[in-house]
Amino acid sequence: MFCPECGSENIDGAAFCENCGTKLKDTAPVSPAESGPAEKKRISLDVSEKTQLAAVLAAAAAVILFFVVFNMQFSAKNTAEKYAKALLEEEWGQVYDTLAIENEGDFLTKEAFVTAMELDRRDMEQQVYSVGKPVKISGDFSKKIYRVGYSNALESLGNENAMEVRLKRSGLFWKVQSKDIVVKDLSVAVPKGAKLKIDKIAVPEKYKAEKDKDGKDIYHISPIFGYTHFAELSGEGLEETGQLINGSNGETVTVKAVYDKKVIEEAADQAAKDLEEILYAASLNKKFSDVEVLDGMDDSRKEGAVDEYNYLRQNEFDNDNSYHTFMKYEFSNLEASSMIYEDDGKDILSIRIDGDYCHQYRDTYWSSHVSDEVREGSGSNKLEYVKDGDKWKLYDISVSLGY
Image 1 (tube, one colour):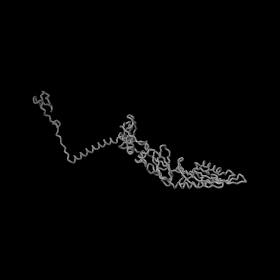
Image 2 (cartoon, one colour):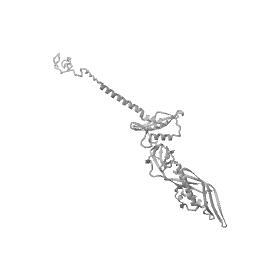
Image 3 (cartoon, one colour):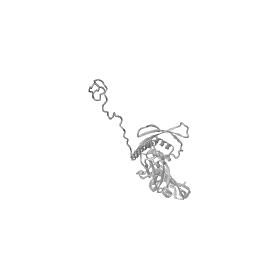
Image 4 (cartoon, one colour):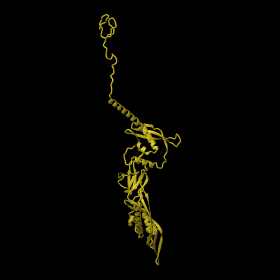
């Protein structure tokens, strides 16, 4: 461009003349950016697009609200507080809902847990507690430990206790670790062939040991909640009964059986026959091993039974006295009574036979004078039996002639 004053040529866009300094007219092209802000273009949405946008915004708000509420209800801290309150208030169903049950089994159901906990607490008076807010002790993304303080409402203020609640993440939820509540093995002995229920749950055959012990079936129930349980027995020859058992010592617990009237009567009849055989053999001075019912008795008491029998045949029957001969004996008005007790894990049926006796002896000490002697009175004998499969085997004896 040329200066209007001196006519000198300047570069396009120069503000002043390089020769005379005259201000030059700004004739440089104006760029779009210098011409001012461009007019904004409005975008209009139709009804359908507005509806879709509102739905998206509502969904996003719902998701945010869900996570806020979910975190409040199911956070580790909230779960620890729920567990502590339910535990102290003995709301066992709610306690179960907070637990991390790692195994599945017939005896890890909610019903089984409630029953086990109620049995454990059956003799304890329920208390009223106030529970404080849980305080985090330690933890990370997958595990946390909280301390929860509590106090008995009836005790003085300031006397606060605390429990430690260990939690683990289970998916989106936090659960209380339950390993201290689950028992690894409850061992139960029942009469062979009997049907067993534990806490109202029929025990499947898969829990039964391959070999029986002392004529009893052994069940190993694992896993299971708690140590105290309600055991029920039923089966052929048994009265349906229930009793509390406690497996806290880790030993096999024997469930006491109650045998029905028919079984007891049959055993009493057998005892009367066995007593007759034992007394008759002793009167003939037979050896213990020659008496079938004695030789086949249970080994655990056989040694004592040998001494009992030998005293009977040698002393009470006077078989060692060549001048005092046993002639005959009679028992009458016999009555049998029975009881069952447990001995070393075995069910023992004890049968007592009471009655009147009449025994006759012949005295030949004086060759010139032979006399008969009669002894009368009442007495009792006791025979004990142990269950051996479907039969009763002689277990122990206590026999005499009645005097």
